[in-house]
Length: 224
Image (cartoon, rainbow, N blue to C red):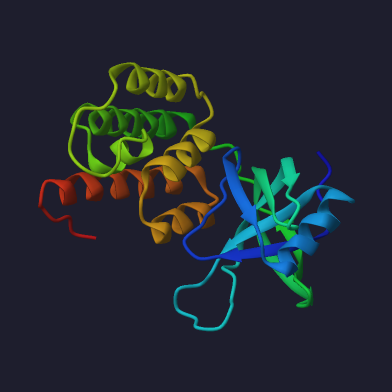
């Protein structure tokens, strides 16, 4: 897939777009209606960047997710429901314009092939933590399964299907992104994972975040 040199950027609080992830969006702001229209008439791509939490003015995080529009339905009032699928992480470069929507140059961030021995061990630990999370029915997992955030039993078949899907993911980078976007509730943690290109480092961060979530659910603490 040929990537554009410049794209529109949608800035959203607490939203991160990972490669391969599917993000449903409701487009209602006039500027983003225009951006969607332009994208549909062109390369069908735009970026989703998280609003920097340390800024009061609109400011995108430097690393964002580039997505391709898979489906879009416009309503009579001009709003649209759409599905955006993540393509790759990108670094946002020069701002070409700010009105009616931001246009940035982008640079794809592609991980290099990692050392297989260390990666295999880290992937094994991630799978172990994910299995343990589903087995215990931790709050974040139940929310992901559509069971809400309270305690209760999750559907065994749904859990089995999700675990099987994760087990079938052979690419360590894809697995790390899949687990991050579905099981990490904190958008700041997800942003760290999005910004971490190196696969080994990303897996190590993910393991720390998953352990921290488990300890938090038990009322314990984990030293950073």
